[in-house]
Image (cartoon, rainbow, N blue to C red; front, side, top):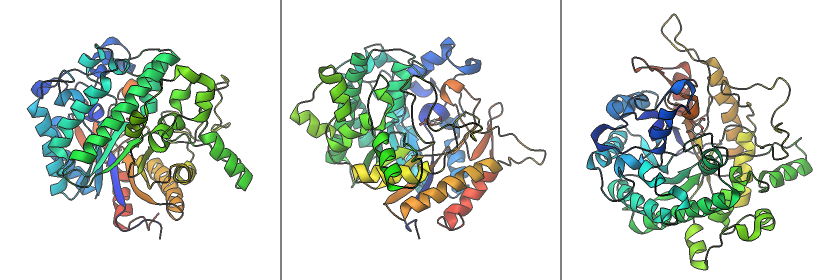
Length: 447
Ligand code: BGC
């Protein structure tokens, strides 16, 4: 059967989306704290309180246990640990994550840490952020604090969540914090500093973690869907999936994965931009592309971005089923993405996010009957099971464990297995959470 006995069934969340406590116990501001104050977000909603996970952590872990999670993927808020981004360590912030790890382990839940899920310290943003060539040293300094505090208990590490969104949404389209629009040379320089940050973090982890650790990045998949099952169509989809051309290169998988997993920039990108892309020395390339242990990937829907400017994406058709956030429902991406990624990068795949937003509400019987989320997840997981018969797949993290702050959409979009009433902070396990528990208990056999 597809899923191995030690398959990691889990769910995920990210610091800014759940923690709240934005200035509690010495935390410094990050770029979302600042941007959300200035009308960038729907209904002017901020993550200042979010779902108050910082103050409800133990109860939240109890809920994770109630739905039988074997793993929980969370991110660290850099400015909670280092309020100015570098220098002074905020011990209360470090303690929060250390306590969270203890609580997870006590409840039999494997902790998976993401170092960077988009909440850049505001103090470092003011020093130029990723454009500053010192930024990879800042990232290393932050990584050291986290690794020294947690690596005795945390085995699984991810450096960047969806680096495409950091660069593409944050600095090309200006639709996420810090809401800027930069030129290709600036994007390439920021990208290079992100690659070096990743590499320095991996090196530090390898040399200093207190146990054998498993490391990856966590980009999102933009896998193209083959027109049919023929070998020609599948080969073409594979090739198109890893294209990296045009002004929207920052959104591609190849831009972030080829340097890290293959040790070079994508050839088509180099052909197009040439010397605009900062070159690395041999020593830097060795750092950037040091071997990783798995390919972590967030999978939501089949790719394509409209690089021809038509605005018509290849994954969309008339009447296409889509979620509340407008994303097409394309389950076969959960088969093709792991298969294509394994073919290109040759590492076991972990699904670090997958899920959907819907108009959840509390029914008259006090429950949340999110039948569409169950159907969506079942379809995607069946495809994952098909993939796992062909290539190594080591885990699946549902996005998200709880409803939370959906970035520029504020609290409008609900992705959780657990419903949250944002006025009272009451939590209710949705039907999908109960269903997921049975999936986990059966190791996927009921799918
Ligand atoms: C991100 C999450 C986000 C989710 C739904 C991913 O892009 O990693 O932070 O909430 O998808 O949009």
